[in-house]
Each structure stands twice: as structure tokens, then as C-alpha cells.
Image (tube, rainbow, N blue to C red; front, side, top):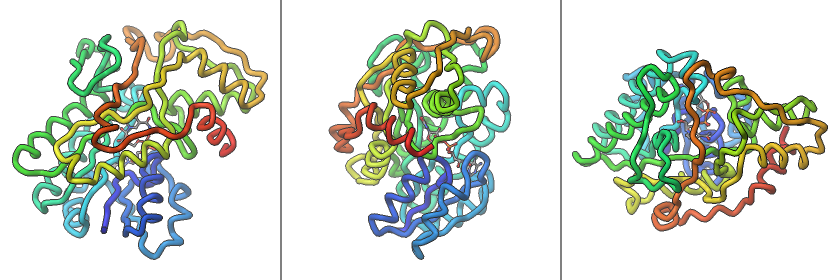
Length: 316
Ligand code: NAD
């Protein structure tokens, strides 16, 4: 197949592109390199079935013509993360809503399958754990920027499902904390890359709040397998959690990373307010019910957290 991966020079997108090329597909990556990098797709240049287009999903015309030329689209381009929405809300809202609008409407117009990257953030601070796809979403007040990213992704889901009712073939994947080589290492990095970098430098690891809050972490190759499986028509119209069901506290995660990287780092407690500003709300547990992913995507994570962390640490 001829496949378009938006955000394909980013962390997850570059692994998706690589997997697709290895499986014999022709792949085009569209990326504006805002958080992605050419280095992430350097090895892919070896395939003559690979092409890179430097551009933005905010360019409706370019998106439309690219979508028209391909059989299906993986839409991963986004301005990512909760810190980003506190510091760059306008950029984030434009990219995640208008960019997705361009991709979704082009897929609808040209009758192409769409796999849309959404996030576990859409459950907000719901206490109904593990999260099922039909669990209620609980967002904080409008004045809390904390929920801005989650809101844009929720709107992307609604838009895609509205087009699905008119015939768009779309599968929405709600990723839960994906980690592995090439993860964003900027100041907006997720917890694992930021802990690993600090541990390797023997710097203190900052624990927000008590550190007793739990998350589930999924190694990128397991996420990619689920993402590619979502191309199947049997997953059309579905919203699916993609995440391992194993739960670990942030404190235990930090200690595991210190042990595996043979680091001298210590843990230091930092208040949420110090990092995110006043009124920041966090979620005490964020764990998926992955039954639907097992059923529709044959999701069966094969990489344990310890093995995945080891591979990630080796990559640094
Ligand atoms: P990433 O920042 O590495 O990848 C995003 C990519 O999109 C980058 O390469 C960036 O340059 C590109 N991009 C941003 N704006 C663009 C634009 N306007 N036009 C074209 N390209 C643009 O992040 P990631 O972790 O690989 O995330 C990929 C997708 O998965 C995102 O949609 C994100 O919301 C979603 N997601 C990721 C996680 C995770 O744990 N990593 C969790 C939930 C959801």
C-alpha cells in the first residue's frame, strides 16, 4: 500500500514509518520538524519506497493532494503535551484542531482510511480506573490550561466520528504513555525520557506530588504493532485504548530507572504548582482496560517494562 504518516519524523511516527517500510509498503512522511527530526528518519532513506515531505498539516492544499495520492493515512502530527499547552496554547490549538480538520476532511473527500492518534488524556481526571473507551471524561475548569491538549484531542475524535457517520473509515487510538528510543527529549519530554536523561547524568529525579500516582507504560514496538493493525477494516469506526495494563507508581518507576542505569541519582519531591503553575490538577491513576485492543487489534504487549527501559537506556 501507499501510506502517508503525518508526524512521521517524530517519536512514534518514525517507528510506524519504519515498520511499514519493513513490511513492504511505500511510505511518505509529512512533518514540519517542530519536535521531530530528520535524524529520526535518516535510516529510512535507504528505502526507495520512502519519501519525506517537509511541510505542515496546517497547509490544507498540500494535505489534500498528499492524501489523494495515498491509500491510507496515519495521522500522528500534533503539538504534544500538557506543558506545551500551558506555554504554547495557540500553536497547540491551531495544529491539533485545524491540522486534524484538514487531514480528516481530505480522507473523507478521497475515501481513504484514517488511523488517528489520540490520547489517554481524553479521560481527564476521571477516577473510574481502569479507563474503558466509554468511561466518562472529567475535565477541570476552563481556566486550567491543563486540559487544553486533552480538549483538542477530544474534539479531533468527535470530528472523525462525525465523518465516520457519513462513511469515513477511521480508527481512533488512545495511546497511554508510550516510551522507547527517539522519544521527545525536549523540555516537553514525557516522564521516562526525562528521568533517563537525568539518571544518566546522576542528577536528581523530580517527583511531582507524592509520587504514589500510577501510570501504565507501553514500549513503542507494541504501540506500533497496534497502530498498524488498526488499518484493518474490522477496526473501522472504533475508538480503542492502546496501552499495557500493568500499573506502576512514578516513584517506583524512578527507582527502577536509577537501578537499571546504575545511577547515583536521588529522588526530589517537587510540587505540581512549582512546575505547572497554580491550580494544576493531576490524575492519581491512569490505566487502560485494553480488552478492545486485544479483540480488534490482537494487542498483546510483548516487551516488559524492565526490558523496555533497558533497551531505551541503551539507546541514549
Ligand atoms: P512527537 O512530538 O515526537 O511527534 C509529533 C510529530 O508531529 C513531530 O515529528 C512534529 O514535528 C510533528 N508535527 C507537529 N506539528 C506539526 C504540523 N503542524 N505539521 C506537520 N507535522 C507536525 O510526539 P509523539 O510522542 O511521537 O506523538 C505522536 C502522536 O501520538 C501525537 O498525536 C500525540 O498526541 C500522540 N500521543 C503520544 C503519546 C506518547 O506517550 N508519546 C501518548 C498519547 C498520544
